Image 1 (spheres, rainbow, N blue to C red):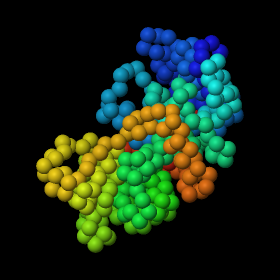
Image 2 (image 1 turned 45 degrees about the vertical axis):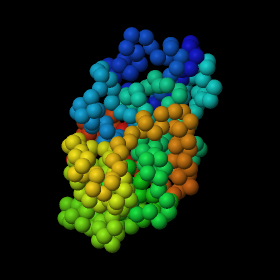
Image 3 (image 1 turned 30 degrees about the vertical axis):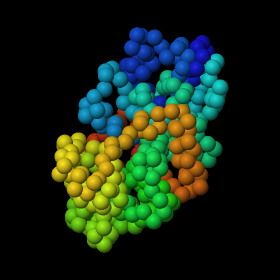
Length: 338
């Protein structure tokens, strides 16, 4: 294979148009020839390859997070390497790998991808699990270990406890000794959240979650709120925080946040407000590998158990997005490209 740092990998492209958009640079050159990428390919169907389905995919599709076109969709996936460039030292043909990074384009059958953004999938971890775990699991890692470093005994609040991130977060936080309060939007999701380690689950469609959190904490509030819901939960989340607490806003499932009135909303209790992302916290290869290692160890030790809620064929991705936006997906879901 010409070039120096490229890899071909078996795995995930939705159409020839998508493939072309993914494979070429802005100047029309191909990344494989440039020597820095990996190509995922599952041409004979023998590999167990999957694409992770995430709510952020709907932001990219709708334009809430604007993208320069043309571009594919999909942030994460898993596959098997079929070829590597001459300067790729730590990966080889046959390795199982996963990713959760730009360039977008995981909704695919084949990928041309930077080797520096791939992580090896250890033995004992299924490729479908790895595919759906990358974005959600790595997000959970930086939320708990970097954005706000929890310690045993901390009481924390997490919104959308039965969602993809929420299920992983509950199990991971419980393994660290946290007392976890979660919110859900329906009765059917309460048991889902409880199975994932949440000590208290609040159905916010039936009761005021901020009032209930105050009751559960004897009026003290919590030191941190992890909120991927956005607009609908912002004000209530701030009410739940104790003095000098931290509001961690990492998603917009209910819509983008309105402007934050700092003197009114943050200053009275001296609150911190942060808006983290994977690109900020896992920007280097070393950071990515450290996070992935911790994540896979949780899976191998069974401190986190992943049950795939639903599988979609690549041609059914429209329905998958409708289900995401309708909040019908009660856990990790994957797209299979074959």
